[in-house]
Length: 232
Image (cartoon, rainbow, N blue to C red; front, side, top):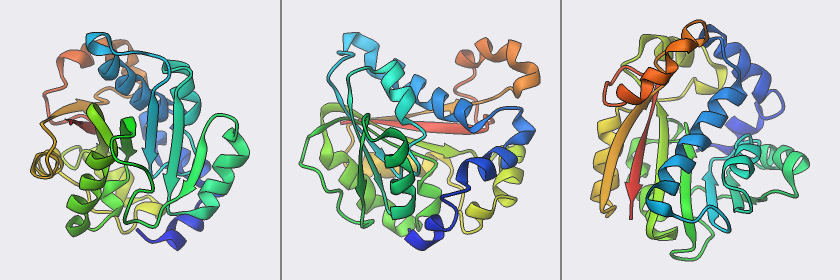
């Protein structure tokens, strides 16, 4: 991850992102919210506690996830980690009372072992060279507590509209889209006890009335995005 690459887009990130996803009919806020909503639903399955949990947003950018974490998992403590100091500065100016914003060197996550209940990376790994993925996934596993969850959200390379959006996006110019099977295999290889895939975002906004059907389609590898959930 090259910090300078993200620093130069930090100030206009939201507007650039909005232009890039216009074909979906949705806003950046929609995509940020659905990810947090999905994570909360997964975490709260089997009666896990809703309050007082710790959450790591790896590659947090300008902190777009923070208000939704506070909505769906209230009173959680949030750590936003990023290599881009400019993005962290913007995030801190927006949400300093709701999260910690910490600079990341791209190597070791500056947190204690087993100190996090939920860790996630939202469309981050496609910016990282593949040979570095196992090291970073091991770090996520290290900081997640026993029974904790790690989510890797990514763009689905099998979806043509996703490929079009990524290919036209200035801050994705060096991105390499990742098959879900690659992410899942790596998560298992670094020691997660289980890892499984859910595909997401099948219907653009004009077809939003059909979105309740998505819960039956999460096995189908044609959603615009997916997440791999690793359980420690």
